[in-house]
Image: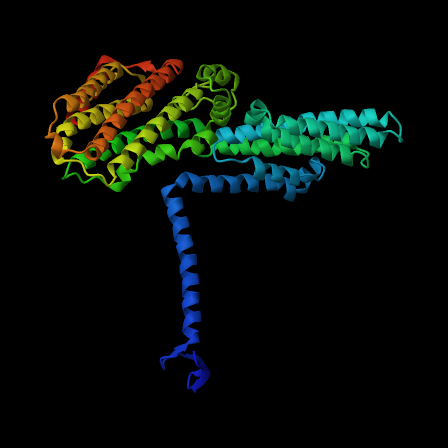
Length: 481
């Protein structure tokens, strides 16, 4: 760069930079392009937001519901008679709606009950402690109040580390600490403490009631239904992904989309969603990791009844008290299969080459086993969707076992009767095919465990028995496919 010059033109002053090769560059162009990039990014953001609203209308409706609830609760603040009825503390109702309104009905109910319970207990205890302190004289009153705040805040905070409390009452414990501290501290200077506690409890009751009514009456999103659909869709995606991976590996003319091949990632990435829908899942996982005792899963699960789906009322096909914890077991079995399919996909995409003769010989056995395994998964998805007890699963699992036995026999015969001359095949060429076969056998074993988990859920949920006509229809549609 040699220097900077400015050139006067009819359109005004133009700043240029003289480059080393004798050319010059206008600085205004850079700023123009920077502005264009900024406008482009802003436009792209709004386009993505629009696509999100179109693809997931439930989220857009949830936003409207939040706005509606806030508009309704704001009436208590704008209208003087209503505002004076709660002692001018209507803003607490607005804050309640903001913090407790959640996406699903179960999550909203959970937070509303936690907030109301925590406020009521803290208010009652705060008024009681204040009365005891006031009877002790002015000298000991601040000491008793401070000591009560210290002890109860410490105990409530410690309770949030207990898994059983954290699973269900973590938010309630936090509200308890907040409310008790406010009442205890402000009660030292406020004369009408009982009236203040009453107004605070009333505003929270108003806010939670509006949230519950809005979330249930206007386009409700049930956590149980969301969890049920998530499990069912993951089964379908897992079966398609298994078939796509095996067909793409053993068939030269297979054209499987990358979206189908990566369908197993949906099951792997759904853990966080399941945790949000079924709250005690992280407690169960932590319990298993610490104690490594699978037989305690049911015992702990029966004790841990805290989950968003279980807070919900009866809706659709689901009664109150539906065994949602069984869906957690099904989801865990699904992820176990998905991990194996991920390893299978990585093994098939390795750089090691397998002789075509070996691949063609074992291809029939591997494809048959993958078809049987994916058929079991699809049938389980049908069971979850129709909520009918599985009648053909045992027969299909037995067919899958036979396919596993055929593949194992083919692997055993490889060492006894080589398909190709020994000098034509190296160990490096055989290992990838053996790995793929072993993973398919492991997937079949985990699919059988998945079938057991679904059957357990069907028994506890008391699924209806499939009629003969429905079974015949299912077989004919399956044969047509």
